[in-house]
Amino acid sequence: MNGRDFSRIYKIEITFLVDIVALAGFLSNPAFSARILLLAPLIISGTLASMSAALFNNLYDMDIDANMNRTSYRSRIVNDKTYKRMFFNGTAMIAVAMLLSIFTINLLTAIFIFMGFLSYTLLYTILLKRRTTWNIVIGGIAGSFPALAGWAAVSNAVSMTAIFIALLVFAWTPTHFWALATNNTEDYKKAGVPMLPSVVGIERTSWIILANSVVLFVYSLLPLFFHQINVGIVYYVLAIVLGIVMLYYSIIPIIRNFSMSDFKRAFHYSNYYLLILLVSICLVNFIH
Picture 1 (spheres, rainbow, N blue to C red):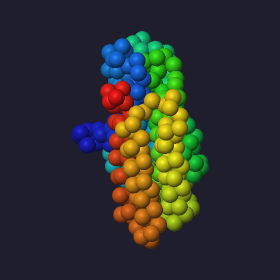
Picture 2 (picture 1 turned 90 degrees about the vertical axis):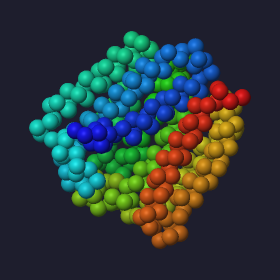
Picture 3 (picture 1 turned 60 degrees about the vertical axis):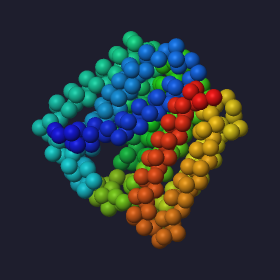
């Protein structure tokens, strides 16, 4: 397996996001400096759990991945010949993640890490993905747990800040993923996966993306009114500016007759949108 295949099979881009979300939860806690040595086991545990979840997702979806242009390459790597080895790798990674987080951090953090793993493998991959257009909405909760794990690693508790970050990721996920899925509607139809664009069509999906982006924008401004949420002045400015741009990218496909290239641009921008907001949250206790 070359480096590119490794990155795609273990979904390193998702793992990177998981780590940034956990980092935001950790660093937004005012007491983080006293527990800074726990950052390493937190990131290692989260990385292993995320990579394990990605691997189990690939194993479960072996039957449909081969039928989709976007994922057909996986059949070269994850197949009947490699199944046992991949299954062992995934099991070993989540086991190490749990042991490391339990014995070096605390049980609550380990629970949140495991819930993130479980919500992606069981809730999204097995229970929702092939059954409902709500798959990515409900299953998106998997991306929320790292924020709770990050805060819990410092305080062995949860807070409004951690919950806010968790739900920010949750609210962002549909806009992000549906913008990507519009370019793969035929793939999903062929594989029998009821992803929203393949069921209700591109036009209706684009309006739903816009509606979700409005909800995301409004939600992102909640810290302006609830000062118990510790995100800082830099976040306030960025949430307004980046949120307006996100609305722009969400409405452009509608104005331009549902161009696939515009959906791609919306998808790519959504990555930068969340990343920049999370980084600003990470800096809250460094900028006064």
